[in-house]
Length: 223
Image (cartoon, rainbow, N blue to C red; front, top):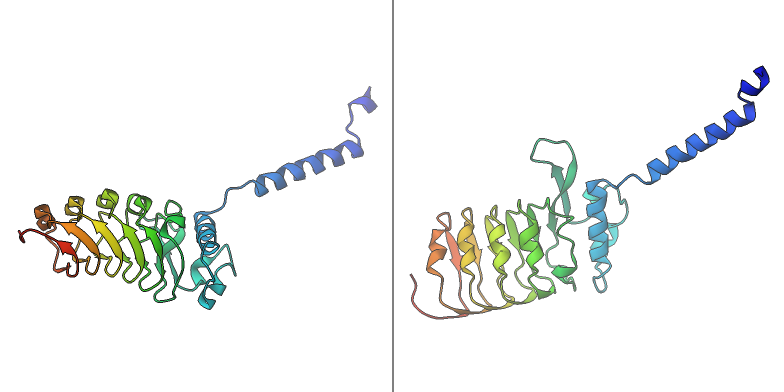
């Protein structure tokens, strides 16, 4: 009876192996950090860029720490947490042949600044950009090939201070939803194909100090 109740060394070894295997599986199944998820979103976007410039060779050098990648800046969570996250994308004049709609803005919801002027970015202005970035303060997309209408979801960019969409191929009316952007100080829609009147409600943006609208097809009087 005593022998039957004692645990054999072989059984102990098997139990230890099963325990280690279970622990290893738990580590392997751990979800990626926010920073790793954001790095993955940038790499997925890079994969869609035709002939990426040499400056983007640094992207992918360390997938757990994209803060040293060219044009990428990181910061701490403003809510008081210590988690590091991507806050800025700045890639000026690299002739990027890409589309904004290929970038996962949901994963990059911590962005406060997007500066992609003077590239070759094509396609429409994606509504997800406007609806996924509550902390965005600067959106600079001048000198690209963005077409279509400015989405009404732009009203969700309530933290926006500067918006420059000049020298693109945007068409349609200036959305009245811009009046929701109470912090907006600079607005540049010049050199596009915008039509219709200047919305009177735009003057509800009481912080607005710079407004460029030339080279469009706007009509009517200035309120």
